[in-house]
Image (cartoon, rainbow, N blue to C red; front, side):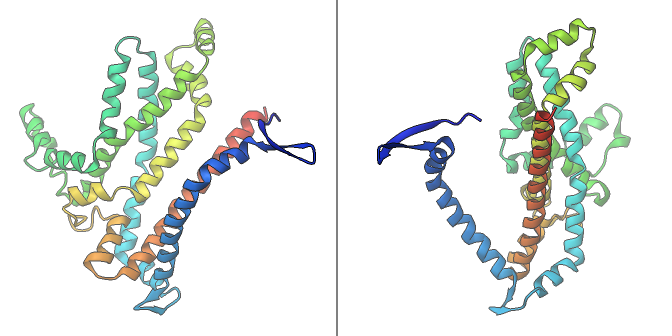
Length: 305
C-alpha cells in the first residue's frame, strides 16, 4: 500500500514522518471537536431527559409510555409507509439520469430543470402544493377542464389518500438530488465501456441496466439510504405546513417528528418528547449502520473479483 508522508523533522538523526491520515486528522480535528461538543452535549442531554420525569429518575417509564401510545405507533407506521416511496424515487432518478446522459443537446438546461425542485425551500414547496391539491385547487380545476372530473379528489382532506399526496410532493422534490448524484457518477465512467457495448449490439436498456447500474451501485445505495433517513426523520416541514401543524385530517399524516413536536410544545411533556426522539435517533442510526455495512460488502466484492 502506498502511503504519502512528509518529513517534519529529525530526532536522533532519524527523519520523523507524518502519514496522510495523520495530516488529515490534524486539519479536521478543530471542526471535529466543535461538532463533538455541540452534538455530543445535545445527545447527552436528550438521553438524560428521556430517563427523567419532573427531575426524578424514572428509568424506562417514558419509553414504555411512548412505545405503547397509539399515536406514536400510528406516526411510526406512517414513516414506514413513506419508506415505500424510496424504491420509486431511486428508479425514477436512475431513469432520468441515464436519459440525461444520452441527451446530447440541452443537457445543461434539463439538468438544471430537474435539480431545481431540490434547491427550493421545503415550506415554499409545501405551500404551493397545498394550494394545488386543495379541493378547489389547480389540479382539480385542470382535471375538470379536460373532462376528467371523476378523478378529482379532496387530495389533502381525504384521510385515505392524504399521506400518499404528501409522499408525491416529497418524491417530486427529492428525486432531483438523486438524478444529479447518479448522473455525475455516470459521466465519470470510462466511455470506452459504453462504446464497446454498443458495438456488440446492446440497446439502451441493456447498456444501462447491465453495465451502468452495477458500476454506480455504491451511489445508488448511498442515495437510497439518504432518502430512507429523510422519510424516517426529515418530513416534518412538509407535514406541518400542508396540514397546518395538525397531521390531519385526523391523524392520517401524523409522523414521528410531528409527534415529538406536539409532545414537547402542545402537550408540555418534554420528557416524552425526548424518549420519542431517542427512538427516532436509534432508527436513523440503524439505517446509517446498514448503509456502511452494505457499502463495505460492495467494495469488498468489487476488489475481491
